[in-house]
Length: 445
Ligand code: ATP
Ligand code: MG
Image (cartoon, rainbow, N blue to C red; front, side, top):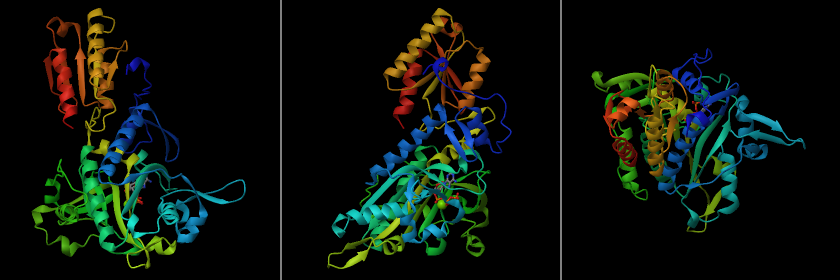
């Protein structure tokens, strides 16, 4: 993309309404625009990152055998009356009437809808296990929408639902989700720690929240510092193997890591003092096993191998897709702007032409653009007639991990400059080598 033809409405001033750095940077980098409280338009740059995040989420779900689909945002109130949640949900639920005076709502989550789909089509244990998921907009009329996309009213969520014959099978689905989430967040350059969360009215130990440590996080968390040394990495997991998934769960959840809701000072004190940490965290996902709560209320049963009708065991598993943009920026920025991890960056690299209009510099930039594009990479070429300082500032603000700087002086020696946004380190090298290096970095992801 040539910047002169793109739509990148960057702001020079710090927007007064933004209290935290990710919100400020998303506004300044022209990624989002508020349309009303907690509701945003996703401008081209923000939309690109959102799509990249979605893609990673999809890929990791599909690897585990989970099946993508799409349910609507607007739902009929009837299903929610069946589950009993129409009254329970309270003011967070946006209720709407259609022209026939029927009660509708903008879905805050989808347990009811998916359970209805399941019961309409699945009758036998032979069709289990089954995990369906979608990535769809949700609406929760939060009392205090704030921090930009971090706590919006309309937000994008991946929500997945498993249906299993037994509790054991459903716990395997739970573990499978834990594994997929670890890998998903790592691919986005994030460390998200699974922490024991509050089971809510259903109780039980079967829920974990994934938290990214950040000063601006809304949750207070307590953990054993050993947990931050754990990496999931690129290990190959057999998702059908109960033992393998269980082993990952044990590895990542055996140390103390809890949110304030489940924190137990006495247990925490058993962790050696030098390893005890208190911090703040951003919840970027949650997994939940809730047994037969919805299947009993909504009569979602299957016939088991002895001919008995039994309610299925279910769980639901969410990832805050739009919140993740904020979380990534909170975890990865400096005083000049965003620093995108390679896994989610909106463009693979920037090209800065120091002397726009100089025949040689223009030709070198065009050639770089062509070779990068031919390799399947997407550069953002700043071809505007602006001074170098302004171009660098824009590149730093929008946070592309790599920048190639092209100027007449370097070209005389046959070199361009390749700069890492993260370290600020630059090296001079021939254009072909710069291209090759960038290609290698992305190929290794
Ligand atoms: P919170 O405690 O932050 O209100 P939640 O526990 O109610 O979130 P879940 O129902 O677990 O949220 O939803 C799954 C994920 O969706 C959360 O882990 C979070 O990342 C994201 N999410 C929830 N509410 C919002 C919101 N208002 N804006 C943006 N993302 C959200
Ligand atoms: Mg949650």
